[in-house]
Length: 444
Image 1 (cartoon, rainbow, N blue to C red):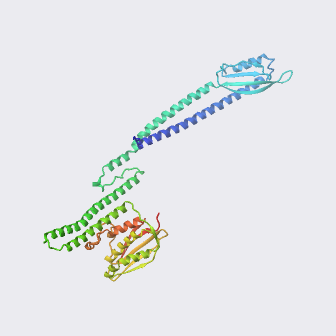
Image 2 (cartoon, one colour):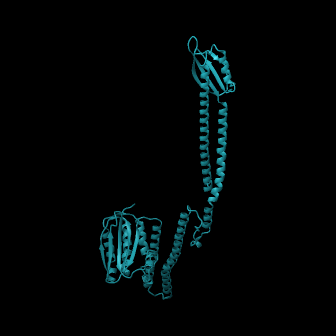
Image 3 (cartoon, rainbow, N blue to C red):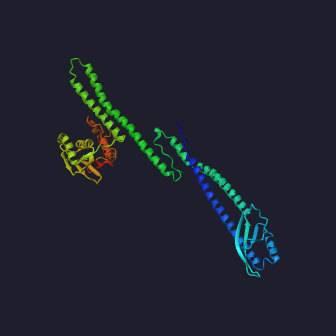
């Protein structure tokens, strides 16, 4: 299947410039031609009007039929006016002055017909006069002018298009320089930025946006490298544990009870499965998966169900959980319970003993709902707060001791917020940390 070769920007601009030049020059030439034709026509009619005045004076000054000098005077009138034709007839159609100029039958004539009353002895006589002017020369002049203007328009358009082609080539030089800079980019030098100095004003926003894209790509690539390292680290520990326990079990006597080893291995396998499942969930969220919404009449009831699951952990940590506010909407309740479980589990782990974990539910607007989990503990620095939703990120080394926490909980919470058309929220000041999510209450 053949495909048409796309036009270059240079070709498009050049052709459009040529077409506009031809149209513009053609319009100017047409105006010149029309104005010239109108002027010639006006001049012809003015000349005929002047000649009509003379003929009226000549015919009305005497008795035409009885004075032979009258015919002679009309003949003298035509001398030097070979492009004129004069025909005089009586009312009954009898031609009394058949003399014509040098105009031929093929000549193009412009005529004026009028009557002249000639005084006679028996009474006034009305003469019908046809005064014609040969405009062949004017028509030839217009044809030559039209041809000249057409050639001038075409030649002018060609000249302008060739000049425009050069101008466009010169004007696109900054684009070629940018293309050369982009060509030099690779995954190894994403930190490099396009040089915006000397670029035209029209290209400055493009360069700025592209540099911003490079910055995001550089950050994503760095995060990907860190993510790969974190994945390797998280998987390495349980795998090493599995290998060590299996090797130890193989070295022991055959009578050795393998129950304890298998239980330990099963625990590590569960941890591996959790990491893999969480990574698969995040991968699906990154590919654009959306929440499967059903009507949820009360978010407070959903929070209460999740809190019952964490009741033992809250009691062990010496914490009290309170729920304030409520909202309704269309949400994916299983995903929402998972996000709330991560938030409450995170607050339970890092809250100060004998304090209250507060879950605030509110309708932020007609379209948005907000759920925030607050706990009292250490203030999280701003630089840590900015990365708190990153994958495998832990604010302190002390968080890595838990076998149940592999640093994906808050990342999953953020993904669930995005799947609901919202975003996560986090703030920490004066020992109070508030982490939550804002969601669209309806599908848009």
